[in-house]
Length: 97
Image 1 (tube, helix red, strand yellow):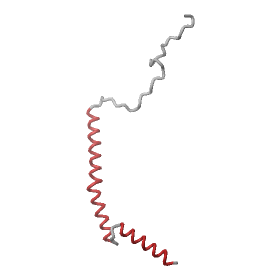
Image 2 (image 1 turned 90 degrees about the horizontal axis):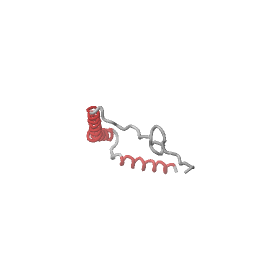
Image 3 (image 1 turned 30 degrees about the vertical axis):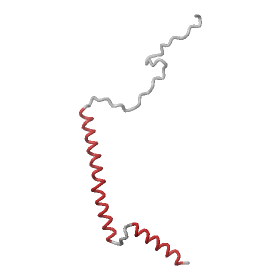
Image 4 (image 1 turned 30 degrees about the horizontal axis):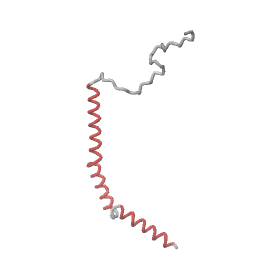
């Protein structure tokens, strides 16, 4: 019975080793370092530089027109029926007429 868990552990270890490229020890580590370095310089760094460049362009465009209006919050709707700011001028219905 004790060999059962050892065999399953060996199978898991073998599957994990194959999934990691099949290399063991220093060569496995070196291959992952090379792959990580390539991924950084081919994908991550260009994406970061593009984002910085876009932010710089946006900041430059915003700085060039400092009187430009930018809506920061949604306007609050006027709760009055007529939409007047200083009071509701709706005339009450006369009962006499």
